[in-house]
Length: 269
Image 1 (cartoon, one colour):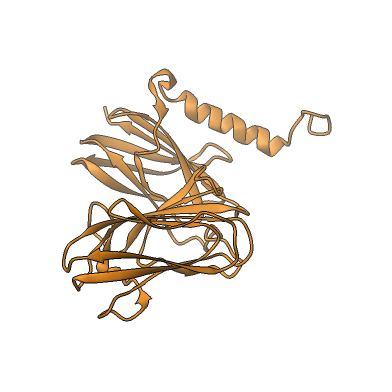
Image 2 (spheres, rainbow, N blue to C red):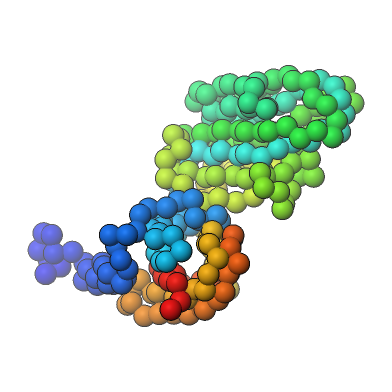
């Protein structure tokens, strides 16, 4: 009983039974953890996935509490307008590292209050260069800004129209957000138009009010699938969708839910 040690809360016990039944509906022996199939998770949520590629997929999506520490890795490319030496400026609390075409030009991987660091590199106009920024936060006023300047270019936050994530299709950089300072659990991934953040003591993981739909991006091979969103509190199927897929990313919209929800995707027979 719930009044005895180890008894547990009845609501929690029921939810664990629901999740157990959810997993039991798969060929669990054939399924393996697969983080790469998740291509986009809403801000403030995390997703864990099991996959039997082309056959079955199980995803557990949940709202995450705001961690006291976090880290972010931004990746993509940058395209300057002028052929000259550029000075990159970072304003960060805490640690920051910046690579341009795999050359480390800023390295201040320490705990500190808001601090400006600079690094110089010569770039050619209208050429794309790989860009990677790593950042961690442990406390205080969370800040991470990436600016640049050159003899022709005034000092400014690097604008989105000169940034692009790998794979294209958008402006800005891919941001992978993790739950601790050492790039631990991946909390969510999104495209940030600029790296120009002043979280003012808040966390980027604070959940926003839920919209009418929560969109999950999954990488699926070609095929015909049936997707079911399962209420983790009572096991009921809240939404069903059948679709043919040509391969690549697929947007799946979850119904309204509280805290967490599970997704079952299977190859249609």
